Length: 122
Image 1 (tube, rainbow, N blue to C red):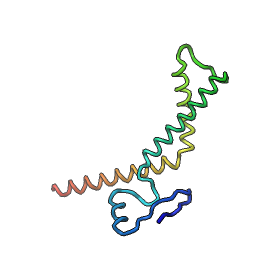
Image 2: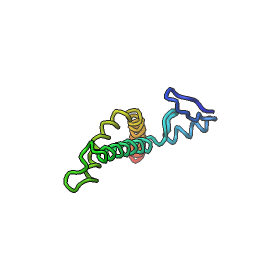
Image 3: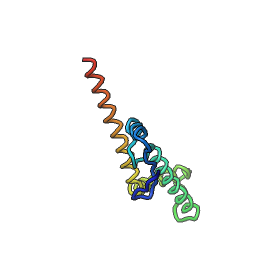
Image 4: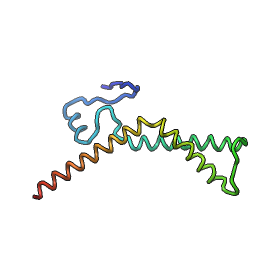
């Protein structure tokens, strides 16, 4: 059974209580991607590569200077980084929020587990 969220993503709903329990035990929350960090990183890399291609084309056409001295590839890489950083800040806000929520859940779970282990030792 699949459900469509507001963003148009389809997520698999748990069929049984054991599926739901195993999802809760593994830290996945319905509606969230279990690999939010990997997805954000891949999208960030995609934004950077797109910016690099645009910068390289603009340099080839002559709109941007092709090089500063003999540092052509380094110049294009740095310019693409400067352009892609604010773009990814705006364009990937939702993915970054999902990733940070997932990381915060893992940290909280680890803190609870550590506190439980410390209380057992006393």
